[in-house]
Amino acid sequence: FPTPSAQVTFGRRTPRLFGREATAATSPDVTETIRRESIEQYEEILADGAFSNMRKNGTMIFLEDLEKTSDYIHDNFDAILFDCDGVLYRGADPIPDASASLKALIRKGKNILFVTNNAGASRMQLRDKLANILDCEDLTEKQMVSSGYSAAKYLERALEDRGVPMDRANVHVIGSAGLCDELRSFRCRVTGGPSRDGPPPSMSREELADYSFAEEERRGKVDAVVVGLDTAFDYRKLCVAVVLLQRHPGCLLVATNEDAYDLVGSDARHLPGNGALVRAIEHASQRDAINVGKPSRILAELLSDRYGLDPSRTLFVGDRLDTDIKFGKDGGMKSALVLTGCTTVEKLIEVGMGTEEEPLPHIILPHMG
Image (cartoon, rainbow, N blue to C red; front, side):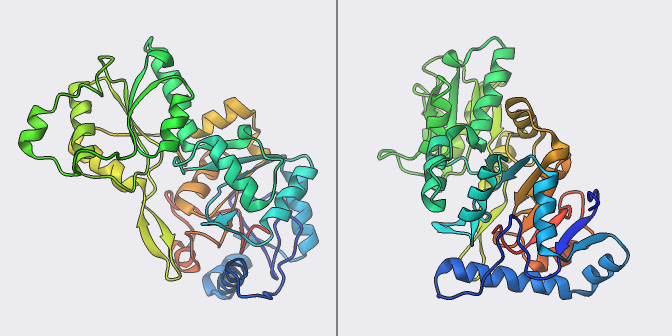
């Protein structure tokens, strides 16, 4: 089979990515609902006139035989990188056949990594969550590549270049306890983090003018402000972060990701992502954040250096065009889009041949299994 370059690969019937064919739903549980909806979306794509024309003119390759599609994956890739939410699970519910497919890849000796823009959990917490949802205890912390871990590795290198070892670094965090734990595992001092009982979420002009920054500047200079998703983000946290950046002009502003939104609910409501917080801080501070999550080159370089990946033999599986698929394309990997997360058939039809910011994948499938 030809290796697709700028082409998109489809299975003609209900396809499988890693050797398990989708089965009809037998119960009304969430996993089977995910299966049914993803297959319906896939069939809509195949019926769309523009996609049909792209097939006819050779822009896309349709691999119609399911066994050959599965063999193609196994024959052409040594490493397979997965996004997590929307690809392997949604909330606490596994994606159809994700567990069996993952175990099959592990048995075949594939290099499996989990690359997520979610900085809300430490790598060990992410490992435990995946092991529990997917019933796969063989997973290890080393396989987990969260954007929190990427932030910590970036700071380790950037601050050491400035002569600041991590055990002397002073980092202020907007984000979760998991992000704070990840940074502390690199021995730096962390302030901020989750909201605690105490001051209100508001901050007046007078209070900001009198604020001492005694806790944040206990070690003197603040070396970095790291921004991860914080569902309790408020005006007080915004004020403190912005003025720290003002008081310390050399302070790094690091974003664990710049995702605009996630989807929640049966009607796919937009849940604002970390990008909304990052933009607020950038605008108020007049600083540009360094994005260390997908689709940044910083994360791609971390994967290359840490895991020795050959991009030409690597497949990235995700559910978003602007982060997952762009990350794979920019990193020289092949990419597979599943229809169990943020990208809908309407979005695919809207982008047509794809754009620089939202490129088309090489492979599209309803769900991972």
